[in-house]
Image (tube, rainbow, N blue to C red):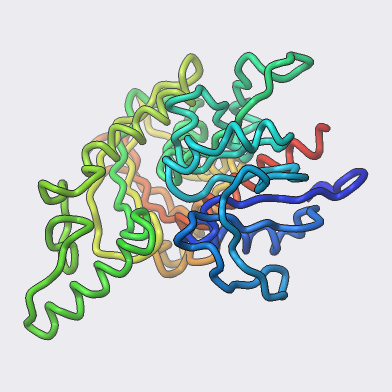
Length: 344
């Protein structure tokens, strides 16, 4: 990781009580991010919660007009509404804003960045930067978007005729409320009790879903469209976006996915594995077990099983992979900050 030059400033995390906010704090600490202080911020309801930072006890602070004073970076890892309400205050205080909620990319044209793909897909920085008076807001894409863009980038040469991906999102993508609902539903079903379903609006335990209950927001189809838009925007003018489908899985953590790519002619699996390795993906050896939600827990990279051909289509190959959704998102966001420090 690049070392910081000059005086160490504060780093602020908005949404510090969320699962992603907690993971972001861990990644900053694990990577020895150059910051004099990590300020944990959240809504008034969560303010005052006792936690720890760098091994020392600390409290989550409420968001107010002085929250970002002295901050070099402000990470938004809570709700989209919090990002919308507070990003300008952070920027006006002199902080570089890095958004993990997706709100600022869709509504304010924040510059999406996946540093692991910089060698094959240099970031499109937008109109700010490079001496421009306009300051850039950065967006760290969702885990599914990072995975989809990585697959497309790794397979760019020779370009496949099509790529289709099916993602199996964990309930932790709906933060702690999703985790608690799956836990409670599982316990209730095993005890033959009626299940509660305020988050998903339907039974997610012991089930696979292509849609949520009528009152659930966001709908699974909305999530699919949002991921598709993220991917299309990041790859625009550079690579063809893959087709994307979502199937909600009854798992707590870890984003599993299946992908099918079809080429004009058969491709050597070794060459494809090498292309993925260059994009920062860990590809299992033929004798290794395929990655699972459990095996990738705590890992920062995308993991792939050995790449296999389709038995009926000469140019078809199948991919199976998994990634720790929280760690992948948090690491990508921190790497954006590290890259900005390195080029400052």
